[in-house]
Image (cartoon, rainbow, N blue to C red; front, side):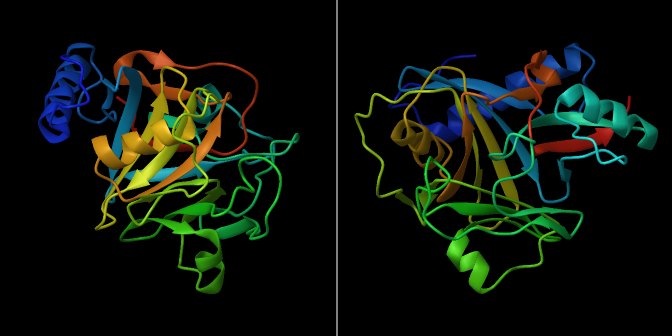
Length: 259
């Protein structure tokens, strides 16, 4: 796969990358059911991204049936096995407290388990504007938190995080282009029609502006939300990747049939 340079047309390069990833998935036995995640380069930085359509079974996971934190991809796969299902891909989906409970809004299966937070606060979460990733029945949305609180949509699943990366096509106003605060980061962007969501993790450390630039310039997405940094992890079977570490809080994953 040829890396994407700063001047390469994103659409054609991305399509080539997707085709290559699909071919690899078929060779490795992943088949079309598993989500195809693609590794690419942009501005000499490495990114991996996974796409879902609104017809996909995309869910948020926090606790098991006994109220115990699931916390990693292996535990979720084990829980899904009873349904004859598995993860097609997954990543951590927002910030959490020491007990792994979500920071801010968290909705799972239509039930609100943690309320929205709209005030300024410390850390990245409190760098307003922050936002909510919402999965509705017919569309995905990334919504600024205060707008969400004023008119909450009917989310089947939702996770609040922050800061927003791209807001109506504009970068977050507090991002510094040449910031030396670089971390492995992950987040989500949504297409204008709400039918496609793209989940991104960086494979090299980036600052906020560089991360947002990938969503806006490479992926062409006008709404994007930061999930986390440092603890960012990805489960991508078609890339033979499943990151490991201490237990996570909320995890977002595409669910597919067991093969």
